[in-house]
Image 1 (spheres, rainbow, N blue to C red):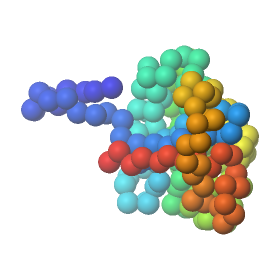
Image 2: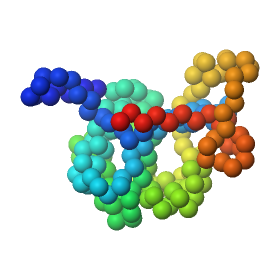
Image 3: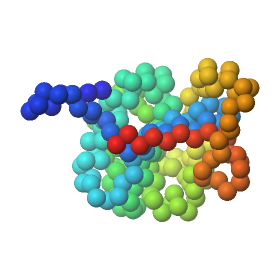
Amino acid sequence: MFLFDRETGKKKIRLRPGAVGTYVFSGAGRLLFHLEADMASASIWRMQDQLLDYGEILYQIWGTEQVKNIHVFVMAANSERMRHMLSLWRHLVEGMLLGKPLPNVWFMTHEEFLMGGPFYSRWTNLGNETVTLRDLPLLPLNREQKVLSWLGKRQRCSPFLPSPCGEGSGEVSVQNPR
């Protein structure tokens, strides 16, 4: 989704995630996520604008049904900023985004992530529900992932685990679009 810059008249990208990634759980589905890592250098209002963009744009890209299986992970610099971001998201969901199909937005602090690691850390949503990556709704495997698995393509191991190919299928793809 694009906006037009009033001064230059050129298109500019409105939604700029810190990173976009997928993780394929063998035989189960794929986890697609957008990651926002808060370093406490941007204002909390900038994060509000980013959260609003996720709410307004992702369902237009993925459609009403599939957006329910898309995740936005917000990793806050500290617990105080996490509380502020949760509060901002709550106000958006109950206000400007009311009634719109929304992605799942999950929050955690950097410290919590470092303590639990990617597979065991617990993400929190607006309802104070906490989940690990294994608990999240997944997108179905695409045709290529179902049909071509027997061709012997190289199995990639998760960079997060010390043991080889220990979790899921180990296929990890993270892209930093910035």
